[in-house]
Image (cartoon, rainbow, N blue to C red):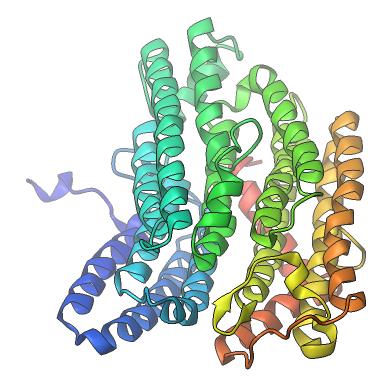
Length: 493
């Protein structure tokens, strides 16, 4: 191959580094002593993910493409990738103690998280439908395995099987939609599709619209939006708790980043065709997330419905991005999503750190009633969990309130008043079950104490997450400016 034909690999350095490093980690795990393999690979994975965050943040200014335009890197990709890699790093740190206690501390676990992270950051940078599918499947295949990682547990095996079967169905829908788009347009490249629809003044054929609907269905499954949410409660409850913490953060953020890129990029001029669908799934997700969680007694199941509701709030911003006309309003919607996802990450990481600390006689407990009287036995953990619950409920002045404020403001500016009103009302309903957890911790009598003490890793995660949620209102500028710069990459000028 002549030298001139080699692609410029600079934009893809983080992905190439992560791919090579994951293979080296696998070799390291295989050839390490069995006793040391897990510790070595766990901390090796954390170091590799942190180095990847550094490589991502050093990405060149502006927009760069490679692999014949199938891969793109810009400030939007940098922002979303940093969130995804941070979530994966924290999930690995949270898993170490849990896996050892459950007797499933196999070195393959952190490597699978690293490989799924590689798929996630690949799909965020996808600039072609084929590249999108490759990233999505690499992420999904690794996640199917870790969902059922606790092989001796019937619940874990069931969670992995359900996730696999429904994930395969969603992938089929997505692939069918992509084939229709290719069949009716003759291209899979996002830039070519965007130019085609722009030149045609947003007048696609019926076949293309059907293809976009199937793509929407496939992506809605990945963010567990209603009516493609059915896998979420069972998988969250059955999977090992650190895996649930990962599912609630990194894949959701990556899938939402992909959702934004696909709908505002190639199909940006077709907002009139897809905005109504996004409005419907956003409303349905918020309402179901609010009402279905009210009667839950298992805290992981409650968090599953909570995450469905939160994705509904984030989708408000995507509905705003489908606004025809004012680019500033569309950009405000995307910026609102990015700020919301950042806050969502810290709230969820902190909450799942608390759930991982719910142990009694070295056995995990998951009932909300198991938190009874926690304020008397472990006031620090009770305070942190209260902060996360109040923030998720959107109580000012915590970070969750500001996240919802930015999203609802964008909806009002886009004149999507019904969406904003349903969002506010569902927040009020959801506040019931968040505050119920606080009531159990502070006002119910202690039945049996939870185990202690707390490891340094978990203490660090709890403290950092709680401080972020508490102090975000005092200094939101770095997150707001980062989200604004990321949004500007999608809406230049």
